[in-house]
Length: 484
Ligand SMILES: *Cc1c(COP(=O)(O)O)cnc(C)c1O
Image (tube, rainbow, N blue to C red; front, side):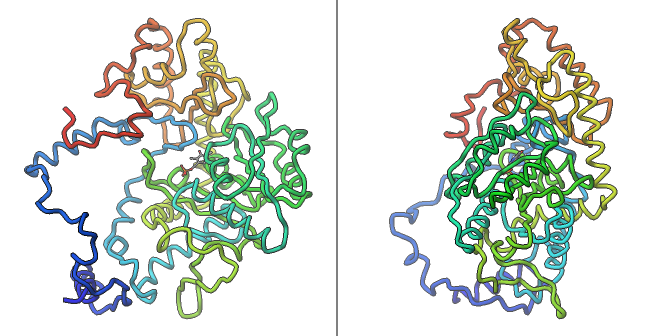
């Protein structure tokens, strides 16, 4: 059978709803497989796969899943990551066969349902951002940063301006400078004031006709809303630069204020943080971006558009930076986001923000007596405590408190970030936790700080793995099926 026919047959068999839908011709060469693969890659005998029964496999994966802590099993105050509870209905919706059985090469006339939802997603994100044009393509927040910076570069090229620098506060997430470097810009760090806010004087000194973009996270990674944000945007615009808003902290802003309203020209969303989708260990995610009118022509292609005859993928955008990802983006994550947005509605989203900020301030007020919080006496949806005094007085580090929390039945806060706080513990409770859980967390920290320091030096004591060499584990992971 010819390859094209085989692909068509497989497609129709696996998706009964699509019988009769003709796939476009794919350009797989019509040659026997042996000719397509290099000889040295062809196996000469069957691979030594483990012979396992179904119960063996089930037990392996169920046991593995229980080695981990997750939002479904434990409180997970991992600052900056917004580890909120993700309603299961979002997973169920995204797995409906009408979505999960779609084939990326189906003709758009047969994709009208999904395109309608993605169009709606673009509209809703534009409304929340206060910025009119949206691309759903980027695969994660970091990818959204890179995409938006490429959009900015294309814009400056198009208007004939050579701008080479991206300014970034010293409290920024590491992805900000990484994205700017990947997009070909020179990075200029901007220091923070003793209050943990952007140092306006330093910013002013570095702003010039070379400035392309100022990347700002608001509320910042210390959990503080930048009170001078409008002034900052004005200063950057005055020299012809653009404002990029890192939207990872939208959980503290939705429905209360909009980045476009305070002066941002572009931003990314992290749907896996703000709008549900269980995430961790690097995925899965998405990183839609929203931009102002003048940047819209440069957004990645295609964009979902509505016409009189239905929805269409608009590819005819000559100034676009092109594709940054295959097909329509990470649709599974985007569908969970649509479900989340529609079930909450505008008032619900505002309530999410208010509750997230209230929860964080409750924790801050209860914890600051035992773990000092160097920046801010109120916070937005998260705050950063410091174990520097404990380190000096009792040789107990932030990492040891974090590790010991695992023994007490809590996932650890983010540690050693942002860099300007010594022995940092970055705590984000999110809106989905009860007062009882927050109280139990405070009491666990109180108990831990009364324990002998030796107990903390070796913690955790109750987890299947205690202290792996994290760098080696990331670089040389052992992926054998049986590890015991
Ligand atoms: C999570 C995060 C990012 C990066 O987002 P990913 O989706 O993990 O790529 C960027 N900035 C901040 C402040 C973040 O918390």
